[in-house]
Image (cartoon, rainbow, N blue to C red; front, side, top):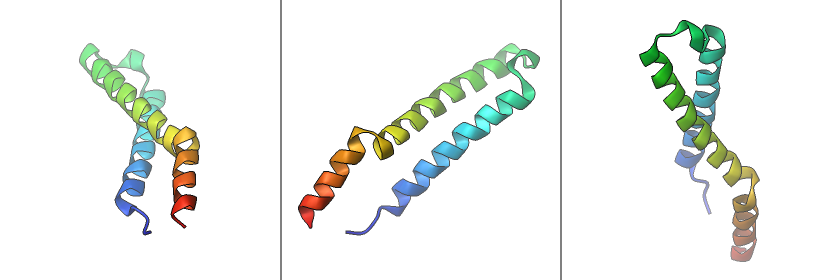
Amino acid sequence: GSKNLTQNILAYAAIVAFFAITGYIISHGLGNMNTEESFIIGNLTGMAGAIAKDIYGYYFGSSKGEHDTQKSIKK
């Protein structure tokens, strides 16, 4: 079968977004932001972290083994 290019691009984009948000926080610091900015950045960081966790879990966790097993069965 062919690889799902869209899925891979979205996974890489999510990982890059997570590190970009983390880098922004490290460079600007939450203490220097007003309440609204820190609330928004905190929510975005939480969402990006959850997405990154799911991506890592899929590619390196139990879903990866299941995906490889299904792939070998189809051959």
